[in-house]
Each structure stands twice: as C-alpha cells, then as structure tokens.
Length: 416
Image (cartoon, rainbow, N blue to C red; front, side, top):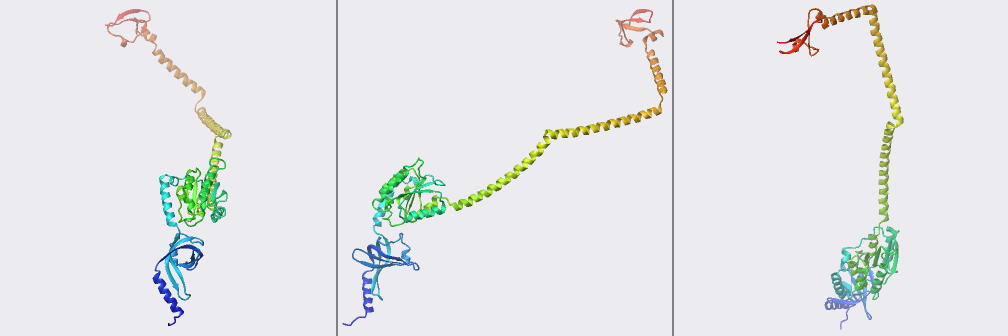
C-alpha cells in the first residue's frame, strides 16, 4: 500500500465529507461566542451534553439575524460541513440560525394575538390614555439587577431629573415571571386616584430571544394591562422585538432607553425654550412699558390742560387780554369822540346853534298850525263828521248822512 501524505489524506477527507454532507441542520447550545469587530464574522461552538463542533457565520448571513446570539442560548442552525486542510479540522459554515423552539412559540404568539384582538384588548393602543407632559411619579416594573433599569435611569437623569421613580423588582423571564408581572401591574395601579398614584407605569426589560421575552406574551399579563386605569408603556426588548404587551399597552417604546426619551421632557430643550420665552417676555414688557410711559405722558399733558390750576391760569390770561382789549377800545373811542368834539367846538358856537334850532322850531310850529282843522274852518272851510268822528270826504258814499260844522253852525247833510 502506497502511503499518503497528510495533505492528501485531509484532501480526500474534505472531498468525502463535503460531498456526503451537502446540507446539515443542527440543534445545540452556543458556547465560545465571538463577534469579530473588523470583519463582522461570528465564531462560536455548538454543543450538547456529549459533543461540540466549531461553527462560523460570515458577515453577509450574520446581518440577516433577527436576534443577538448569546452563550448558553439554544439554537437551530442550517449550513454546510467543510474541512480546513492545513489543520485537518472540520467546522460548520452556518447560513441560517434562529432560537430553538421559535416556530412553536411563533404559532402560539399569533394565536394569542388574534384571540386578544377579537376581545378588544388592543383598543387601548388605538385610543391611548393621555400622558402628562411633565410626569412627577413613574412606576418601573423591571428587574432590579437588569441593564434595562440602569439604561432608563441614565437617560432620565440626563433628560429630566425632577421625576420620582419607584422600582418594583419584577421577574421578567421564566415560568413565574408572568404572575409577578401581572401582580405588580395590579399593585401599582391600585394607587390610582389617590395621592400616591403614579402618572405612568413602565413595563421594561432588555433584549433576548423569543423564549426570554415570552412572559410579556402571556394572557394573564395582557389582562392586567387591559384592566389598569393608569397609562402603561411597554418597553420590552429591542426595536425589532414585538410582544403582546406592546399591543395592549397605551404606548409601545422600542427600547427601555427610548421609553425615557418618549415620556420625559428634555431639560436642555426646555431651558432653551424658557430662555427664548424670557427674551420674548422682556421684549414685550419693555415695549408695553414704553407704550404705557408714552400714554402716561400724554395723560399728564391732558391733565395739565384740563386741571383747575391750568384752567384758572388760562382764564386769567383771557381776562387780562380782554381787559386790555376793552381798555384799548375805550381809549380809542374816547380819543375819537374827543377829536370830533374838538372839531365841532372849532366850527360852531353855542349861540349859533341855539339860533338855528330856534328857527327850525318856528318852522315846525308854522307847519303844524297850517294843519290845524280849526284854522281851516276859520278860513271858510267846514268840518265833516259822521257819528261824532271827523271823516274825510273821500270816505263817504252815496246816501251817507253826515254833519257839517264851521265852528259856529252845525248842519246835517246827505251825500247824493
């Protein structure tokens, strides 16, 4: 028999194995898990109670995983068996991997989801209770030793450290977890309406496999959330993880850290807003103060113009002005009359004026005498009277009777 070289033997073994095991499907527990940071490849071993085999999953397939593999986690794996000739070792090149038992759990998950949806358990998420803008007291239902709690407290301290947290140490994994979660929900909600009431109840835990998160897929937990009067937020797992509590709660948060960002205000943002508001208030106050000052100045001027002192002062000025005008008018009139009087005194004497007035009087006397009826009678005229009243001739009509008098004789006559 011709001896083979080591390389030749390993080459024949490689050909035999790879042609015999074209596709393998294994179930086992992960150990020695390593994520190569630069390449993105996953290196790990798969073992059971009696044996172990090396495995590798290259970056292209690793990106399609919907969970983060961890040591001790039981998984189902599909891949190809290959031999590494230089070391004479063989390993599995994994192409697909998922947590073991996930298929049965997925069916159970979908069945429960449909059942609860028919019962109306998802109505809260469609019509959630309003959350306070500035919560003062929040109940955290999570593991006291879990990373989720530390993540939430870290974010809360950065965003808004005026909130008071009460941590209910809660089992979040295992067979008894569902009872503890439901019990703590009911207990935290029992303070509703009292001075010790919580503004929000947060259900939280970190990421994990479907089995790890299964407690939040239990109907007893869904019922406790549905009956609660306090707003409840489900912050379970990673962003890609969806559990039944997400659909029943008033709100779902993709991660525990994101939950704090969703329900707590950002103090930095509010400080900026308060600064902007303060500046706006200062500007508005200054503008209003200026406007008010101008209005007061106008009112002061108006007051001064209508005040008693101002009126008295103005009236006094007016009286002085009128007095001055009156004095000026009187003086001017007196001056004018004095000048006229002087002219009259220069052109006429008193004797001349007397004689002129006497002549005018005599002339008027003669005219009056001429108009005296008695004088006319004496001149041969008769006076016509009717019914005792002197009557002009033109006022008589045919047939009128009248009296004639010449001062001595009287006669009755009739106009024909």
